[in-house]
Amino acid sequence: MRLDLRMTAGLLAAATSIWLAPAIGAQRSPASELPVRHIDEIPAERIQWQFDRTLRVPLADPEKIVPLGDVPPGERSRANFATLIDTTAIDPSLLTLAGITAIGIGGMPPARRASHVSFSLDGQDLTLYVVESLFDAERVLRQVLAAIVEEPGSYARFTIDNVRPNASGFLAATVKIRKGEYRIVSRPNGGGELVYRLRATNPSARLGKVADTKWENIARIERRHTQAELLADIQPENVSMARNDLTVRVQGGDLGSIKDPDNIVAAEVCEVLVRFAPLTNALGSESLLITSVSGRGRDTDHEVRFRQVLNGIPVERPNSLVIDRGGRIKVLTVSLIDPERISVMSPAITEDVARRNAMLRTAQLLQISSDNVVFQGPAEIVYELGPGPGGLELTPVWRFALVGDRRPMQARVNAVSGDARVLDGMIR
Image (cartoon, rainbow, N blue to C red; front, side, top):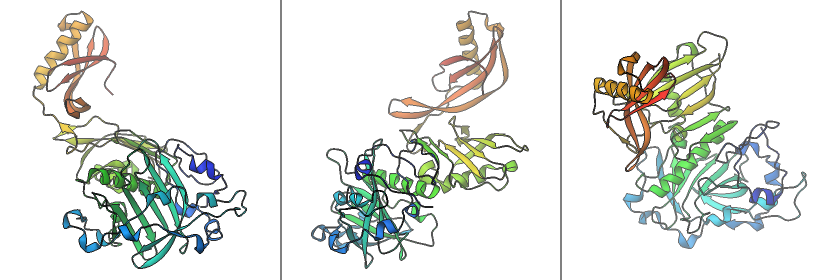
């Protein structure tokens, strides 16, 4: 698959809306927040005929490189799929516009050639040609894709915090060449970057994170970076991500498949979520409950709805898969909660107390006798996500379906405080 890059340098450089790169002829959708162009979409001839070795500039400053032996153990990754092999000191300013002015107009070679950047990696001298340098306005980061001139199909992708005022300059990068795949991340206190070789025997290594979570700024950038890498592999038609990162919806592209769509089980859903962990936040230890499968047994798409279960209580969040009759996943919507990041409250009132509060509140709102409030079916307790004193928190809530004054209604009773809310309509 090849993507025609015949556009002006100004258009590329000024782009603030991040677009997906679909197949030729497909419409673009502005829903994604990350540039996810795949290097295979870049015609090799647009890189090769613009290469002039005399114009190369070094990407790293040798005078700022810290010797590998001087890196303290506390800065080194503990990831079992990554081996620290080197250090470097990248100048991220060379990755913003370098090479962009060399993109041809109308298929003709440009009148002016731009600089390529040289970079040494694992004993190999590489030439990088920037084919895309775009601003992620939502997260105030720059995403850069560079081709490796010496190896068609090889690439380097960078995620850089060098856009906002007083930016850290921290970055995360992946370099994929014939010799192997590498991850580069900034040192936590500045002073250059660490270079890791990813183990080819570990299939999840290329999307794993090497930066320790205690280095919050670097971990944040590497997380964005692995998301961009994953979306480049998927090549979806449409992506939307909630600002707080708790919900993601991916439509189209290579989302994999389900073996038997008529007999889907929670374990297989969990495998799907882990496969796309940079986007779904799945750890593999989640407990899932499939709540409904629409279209089962019919020649139509299936929608599989499921919930995460914490402490034996389902979490009320949008989670679903849309799959076709052959099992191919068409849409993935996921909102998982990490209990290590979000406070989880414990129930303090019983179902009987909650039922009484729901009945009294309904009677009060409708100005009817509590004897005219009729409960329908069993109660359910779920977790609701909402604001708390220290940020977002999960609160257990008792839910009741009921009829008041001949109107179908639902009551939700906070299982911590006992406060009741009554809403029109049935529980869905």
